[in-house]
Amino acid sequence: MIRPGVAIVESPELAERWLEAWAAEHATGIVTAAPPAADWPFRYPLAPELPQAPVVLRVDAFDAAIVNLQTAGTLLVTTQRAYLEQEWTAVLEAHGRAWLLVGGIGQDDGALSVFAQAFRATDPSTRLAMCVDALQRGRTPGPLVATASVCMEVNDLDAAGRDLEEAIALAPSWAAAHYERGKLCLRRDDLTGAATAFQVAANLLPGFGPSWSNLGATLGELDRPAAALAAFERTLALDPMSAQALNNVGVVRRELGQLAAAEAAFRQVIQLTPDLAFGHYNLGHTLFLQGRFHAALSAYAEGQARDPGKNAVQASRLAVCQVATGDADGALRELRRATDGLPREYRRQLLADTTAILWAVVTQQPESTRWQSVQAWLEAELRG
Image (cartoon, rainbow, N blue to C red):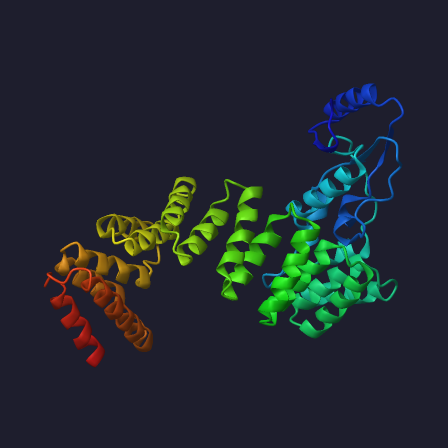
């Protein structure tokens, strides 16, 4: 049985075979064209009103929907493939007998709408002028959210806020509008507002992982680690092979003192992305907190080997592990290498932090004197 959902085919022949199989199961079914893909990012609701009968919506490809030349780190959420896939999935599941057939039909979407043209423009000011002009002909949710995104792109946060408020008033159940509001709140350093907005977006479209991920990051900044962990675990449940989601879970579990669980998460990160330096660094820090200095030293060394920037903070932690494992001379060499050439104030802060960490290690090894030469060097550098 062909279950409701998104069917992606690669040729007209495969599309016709799929339709033949579908028609054999749904004698009273209807086949019709989906809205042009280029307009999907600017539509609310995304799908047209569907008949109660079984229905197939046909479209050439997702590609036209995800064209976006925005700059300055801004990206309208509705131009992201993952978001559109989840929104279509929600539409199809709610209907229960609807399918989206993607590809293989060569559908001619015709002339691009103004908003589709705007997001293909290379100049942000041109994009903004086109959106503002088009908005005068109809202030509906899709164009309002798109224009708000462009306002954020050009750093007009007040205008973005007004457009988003209007969009949410018109479409309070649209996840995209709340997600964009969350991004705006982050730009305004309003972490509480961002957390609220991302929570609403996640509740409205729970299959879209970035809402949960951004919620977790924001809750972490608000010093709510337990809530952040729950959000990150929702992200991980949606994509169990995501190294970023695993890393986030590991970091929060470590903050909560759940060191064994954090270690397991970071080891998975390393399996998935062995060349990611910070996977090794995070594992090293977790092992360090457990007092497993030899294992931590190995992890920090692996991180440094893979880190083209040779992060100075992580190098200083490696040096402390060298002290703890009896290699004071190696620790001094590492500290000199890592701190040589750093800006003066940053170097002093890093050396002060290293001193504090070293003292914490010393309290666990009161019989050792190997640390004294390193401590003497740190004190001399701080005095100088």
